[in-house]
Length: 206
Length: 206
Image (cartoon, rainbow over all chains, first blue to last red; front, side, top):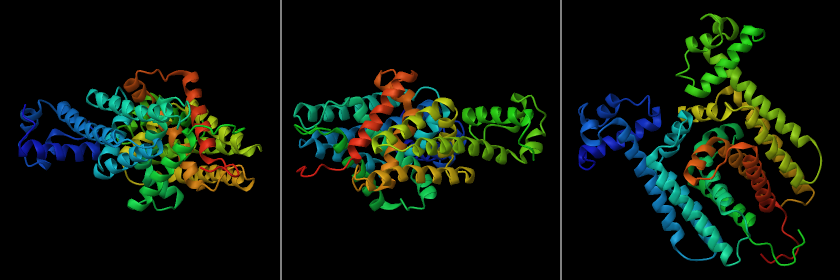
């Protein structure tokens, strides 16, 4: 197997596009190789199998997201700023990987366990985000919310926005296209999370 | 077309199951009629077409959700209690309609506009939930958060939990099966939203 080289790169790009458009089962090796201007045996030669090609696409995608979230979390600062950077990193990732939401939707619609290739990166995301929450709890900035559930709050809203923005726009009549709309939603998610998780002030009766 | 009667009922149930398992394109009329113990022409006779059968499934599903959310919002009370009832109604709906998440995932993976049959119900949900937020703002319980974005916060977390709970459980090693786990997540969503949207206390310096 040889993942490098021009042909392998073209196969990865056409696979990403076709897995997003059609899902794993309906994206044929024939369609993928044709779109990559490669011969029919190129998937086997470079990746071993269609499933391994899919796993490589998923691995690249979630490794990139995990790297970016880890990068966003690495800089020190107040918990609110670090949460803002995490949310911004998620939105930036989805802006750069427009195929990611539909690849995820196809995998969820297909059912079964998540692709093995995604799991280490998903675990890393969990570690990264819960780490930011725990740091904020250690400094007293954040209250004793369950870090796992706090992570869920940040991820779920960010992912659902990219996944459902067109449906939400159609149902609401509100335009959600473009970077300004995404930035407003990202700010809303951050602001809500910071308010939801910040420590109660001393003597606040509520 | 005749949507009532035992055969139509069986067709609706088998269609719901097969659209969830395979998606619209891969759920054949042959498979749907066979599972319903009906003849091959029964879909045309009772629903006019496979698409109309799908639209009827989607209509029933989202009408039920919209009715339940409207019912949950109808009772008066403090904003926090009404938000809790909205979230509980969403979780109860998904517990009663286990096919709903995958039908939604297939539709999102397929791309294109949402099914027409869903739109009036999605609009009603928006009206219901933004209404609860606006009522809480009118009484001074909630701050001037954008009611549309507040609605997004409640819906996105509730939907993403049912959609992704297995993937999240696999990645985190945390069991999310069962009603107790769902109830804990519902409480977290409610508690976070109430903290995120409540009015700032007078004189709070933050």
